[in-house]
View 1 (cartoon, one colour):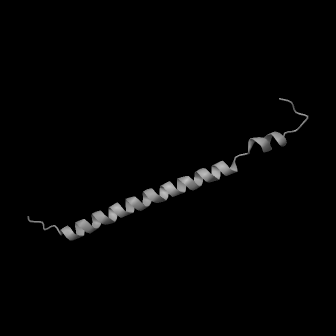
View 2 (cartoon, helix red, strand yellow; view 1 turned 90 degrees about the horizontal axis):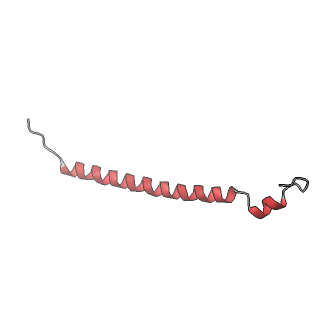
View 3 (cartoon, one colour; view 1 turned 60 degrees about the vertical axis):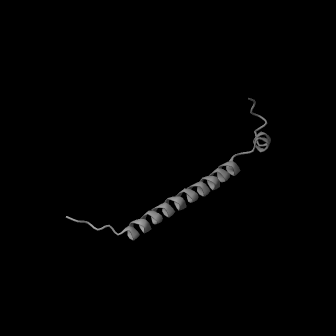
Length: 59
């Protein structure tokens, strides 16, 4: 049995896979950076936290 391989299709498929992986990695890094920014901004700042403490409660 002889199988002819069309190298143009194989090459195009490999290029498409490489482009897909590159796109996924870039989007993942961008989403990770945005997530870190959101987490940092959502944290309570120490100065504000101290100011908002109830004066009747002593630690």
